[in-house]
Image (cartoon, rainbow, N blue to C red; front, side, top):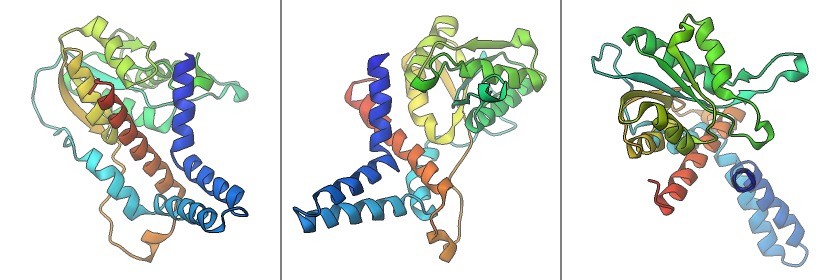
Length: 254
């Protein structure tokens, strides 16, 4: 748990906006003793923070990830044993007297999985404990299961795996119940490349069913260069994925 928490903290410090703010703060700290270098750090942090907040840069970062697997064709026919949906976060609304609620990303993945499960009459496997050390006891999969039930999926067709904190652990968790099966794998399009490899390495036959596309076809205009919070968030998602791909390649999991 300690190593997992440290890894999450380190990732938050590297990714925007944290990493770029640290870069600027360091520039301010050294600017009196080393004016040119201090100015360089401050300017670099500012320029990078601006860049990842505008749509042309956001699209350039996230589209290569989303192009890895095409959208699953609605009328496609294939054999599969289950629909596996990976969680994407949860909101703890206990301060309102409510239980944990699936995040927007988890909702769109759940809806995509429910549509496939109902269309092909397959069991729905929801996977995810909590990837946030601050919410270690919150079950993302359980929050998603409540949405699936509200959307009409019978309880007997919903299988919950809530002992996984990340994608690799999710693949290992599902392996114990569905070893060697052919699955429809549902997750955000930018997250699919790594997910497919992890599940294939656990012995699954995988049919990718990406959802939640972030990249768009846009015409360049002055509006394209106005920074937006959504652009910053999507760039953060893409950069986190590139870092994960690099790390898991280094340690031999990809």
